Length: 459
Image 1: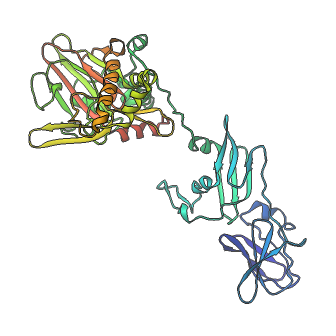
Image 2 (image 1 turned 90 degrees about the vertical axis):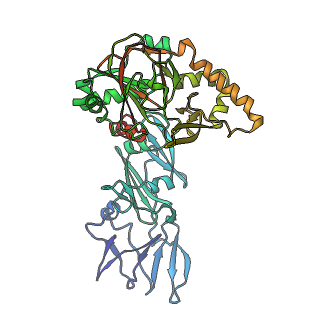
């Protein structure tokens, strides 16, 4: 509450949203700011904040700066034009730093010039009454706000201060605005690859000790996954505990029909899945039958005393971008057509989910997810008959790109190597193998590994 002192007695300037209510003054009296008043403008001088009052009435000062509203004895309000002895508030700002057209505020944020709507600015106020900094939750009811006109704006260094016509004060750092106002770019730029391009680079990897014992090591692992879609943690103990010591640094395991983790021993069919065989597997995404597919697929080789079994990786986003470039209509079909996937095991499990093969960001058009798994595709009952031929053509076009020799990147997992794969982007498969192979596999939730990356400033 703003305080004002009278020459003959003390009074206060009372809050009356969306305007200020000036109490009744005796004729000839004037008011000036109290020391300690929140507004620096009010503290600076009283000559711009002086009202000479001619009668025993209560006046409401409209902060549009052009009208004064009088209340008569009956309580009705009527506009009154300012005369020379009435104070008129004005919007104060440095035009080079911040300019308003009444609907938005023009600002320079870093290297870009933006128009920030006033409603956005008021909605994102981080003062104590609008935002709980302990729980990181909003307190303000945006849709109850009105009269969002500006009274003052001021930019000093990295600080933007806004005073609204209802008297509310909002303070921002320009750095915070730059990070949080419309900005479609990602912190870590993706490196889209095919086989030849990936073979020219070292395998994205982090040493086990570095990953588990330092934040820099963990950050390096997550950055590799964001950039390339996969990373190898090398030198881990070839045990289930060794696997968890790697993954627990990122998030808890995702509980699935396979449990928290699954040790796959070749030839032992613990679940109804070809992953438990020694057969070759083409590139695919796991858990497409889940509403929210697993975020990261983890493979940890414990032992293999035979031949073959190389892991196949294919960058699904690279393949999809190639499809977009060569066959836009096929790309759009796979973005807009919903198809089913399912997992059935005995009479206990029948997982079923609908989703598009390709998903894109509504703001930027960038790819966000691929659901490609020919093994788990369910009966196609979601596509109208007239659209079925074109869907199959589109799916075949993407399949041909994914299965082309140039799309493949092969890596041999040896004991102690933990491979982490972005299951929303990079498909995996394997070659056939001989002998006994023991591989530990588990999943990490999408939201949780992205949360870890975001907390480390990577997203």
